[in-house]
Image 1: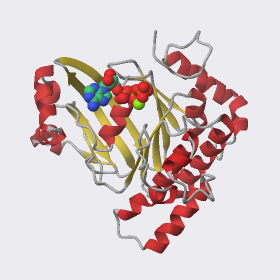
Image 2 (image 1 turned 60 degrees about the vertical axis):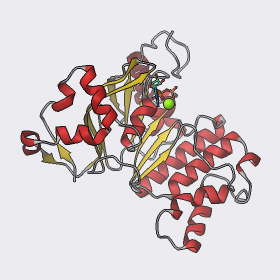
Image 3 (image 1 turned 180 degrees about the vertical axis):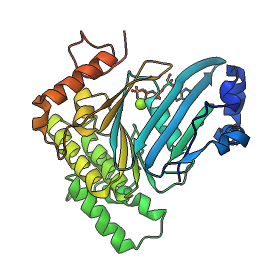
Image 4 (image 1 turned 180 degrees about the horizontal axis):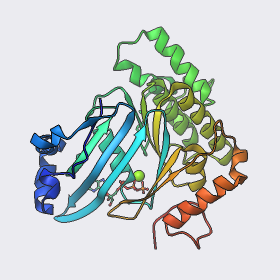
Length: 310
Ligand SMILES: Nc1ncnc2c1ncn2[C@@H]1O[C@H](COP(=O)(O)OP(=O)(O)OP(=O)(O)O)[C@@H](O)[C@H]1O
Ligand SMILES: [Mg+2]
């Protein structure tokens, strides 16, 4: 069940940064406790069709006594079955936002609803591909993919068959018994993808999962990933630095500003599915790319990837 509120965030969200910092030390549980009180709960309505709904997320880090304001009122919603991308300058807070959704990072104020529940670690309905991939080097390719099955009650034979199927999906047939040090960077990314597909989660959070792939492999894995999402009706939120990739794959693209990051544009991509690389020359595709470049302040830039602002 998804709880929504039309009320502005209350409690610590209205406070000065110092109050927010105190809430952060206590972790998100305190923030939710404060916000979940009295009139606020009464104003809530139910929307079961949402995979993600965040409202006015504020996030600060404190490092060596300095306050780093990372997220400034980030509100994002994603329906079940939708594939969306998050794009914004390096260091703006995309990975931090994904970690908040996965319950791996606290936040100072705002509300977060993921598949009708609070974020929290130990949820098996959310699959996560970390920017650093978080693979286990002492394990083989197959044993890395099998990892999620070890946390749930799954028949070993069934798990191995499923893992081999997804390894084949990402083109790694025959590499099951290789150790991580024996495969390339791009192959490691494919292992991480096979592992997240293995979890057959209802929501996939992917932090630059395709960045180390060459152009050919990247396009074919893009297509494959879109097909898997369409088949399984999984929702996915993907962080990417490639505007073309975001438009090709997504139903909507959230464009973030530099730090403190806000969502400065939300672009619906209504190009019909299934999509192939041929859509990249269509007017709707080119227009969406132009709009995102403009929202990123890249109108005059030559490259369609996002990097540190000058
Ligand atoms: N655990 C942490 N402690 C302190 N500061 C952090 C922590 N994690 C992230 N930050 C800071 O938060 C800001 C956003 O970092 P984040 O990794 O979310 O950016 P990003 O948008 O994912 O960047 P990139 O595109 O380069 O991956 C940075 O200033 C970073 O230094
Ligand atoms: Mg990142």
